[in-house]
Amino acid sequence: MESEKNVKYFNDLEFPARKVWMKTYGCQMNYHDSERIMSHLEKLNFSTTEDQEDADLLIFNTCAVRDLANQKFYSHLGETKRLMKNGKEVKVAVGGCIAQTEGKELIQKYPQLDFAFGTDVIDNISEMVFRTYAGDSKFAVNTWDRSSDYSIETKITHGNPQAFINIIKGCDKFCSYCIVPFTRGREKSRKLAEIVKDARRLVEYSGIQEITLLGQNVNSFGKGNGETFAELLYALNEISGLELIRYTTSHPYDVSDELIVAHRDCQRLAPHLHLPVQSGSNTVLQRMLRQYTIEHYLELLEKMRKANPAMVISSDIIAGFPNETEKEHQQTMDLLDKAQFDFIYSYVFSVRRGTKAAKMDDFLTDEIRGRRLREIQAKQLEIQKPLRAQMQGQTYRVLVDGKKTMAGQTQWKGRTPCNRIVHINNLSQHENYLWNWLDVKIESTTALSCQGFSVRSYGRQAPSTL
Ligand code: SF4
Image (cartoon, rainbow, N blue to C red):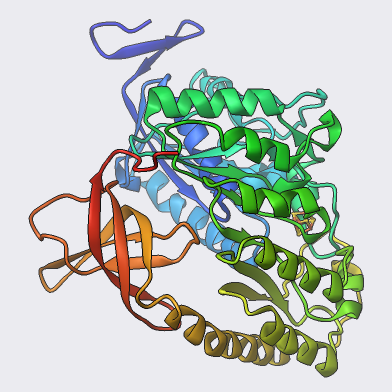
């Protein structure tokens, strides 16, 4: 119920118009969770602000996977003390992976924190905000949803044609270095029919043209329900008006022959696979508990590229896993040559408390780790350069998703279906091309960027006639 004074009510408590500032760290799952949180808060009369000073409620949606994101969060949280001193009433909340495992400690340790909420309770955010404004404070909610079903409807708060759709949550793999099974819980998939209905609704009523299926391990989808990820892709591929289907992220153990064939058959499916390998050494993979060998991994790439020669493969690599020998590191360098990744995300190993790797003896120094990371990155750039050069002269369909302005000149950009960012050079300075579909011919490339020009414009309608 909304009154004329722009006040909303929740459980009889008055909610005047307020502003929320939200900071999201980490992966796309977290960004999507933030959007979901925002869709709930809108119903409590909150609108977003980019300015912390202007906000009534601050929310940090945290990531526990990488050390850097972790450190940034603690530093940003420390800065909020300054806001408290200005005398304005500001509520502060922490959500996400750190709140799931350390919510209670955070509440005790940081006086400025009002509440903490874990990854499995984000759909209860309204109740928690209500509790705070009703006078309750200093609480942490990090319970798990114990029901066997995972059923949600995708919420979007933006007006653009791209949407993330959660299809599976949690992870059962327990890789020895990874905190995710502890922060996101056990694997649970939505039902295939529910996702297809959700996607159809988004396409028909919200103008969505591109979807990204999300999960820690999307290709493990459906195991508990007798369904498969490939079946889901085939079903989504039938949705008229949907231009592109992307997904992230996958585990090599769960890449089935059926999924490989889906990449041949489904025209709406982006020809891109992000398949984290983590190391080129079988002995390191064993210590990581990754459940595949390099030989198997390379065989998957070969099959994938055979099924669809346009496939572009990217990966993740961890440099300096505990006790990684120089020989094991060299095996990763060799793998880069063999795999010919289009792109990698690479990191030095960092200890995550509570994981098996945290208990391993480790003789590597930060210096060795840093040097190995630099070697991996330099080698990958050498590999990427000729791969990108092959794009020159080719035409790709691109959805324009942003621009940069330098020295008064605007340059629009977008992503190819195979996930390469392209900057477009020949568009009018005076028109708005955001969310337009274009065919873009690539004229020049470097190891990290592609420049092209538009050869055909389709406006904002998905151009596919499938
Ligand atoms: S597959 Fe391994 S690395 Fe990926 S989320 Fe699960 S435990 Fe973490």
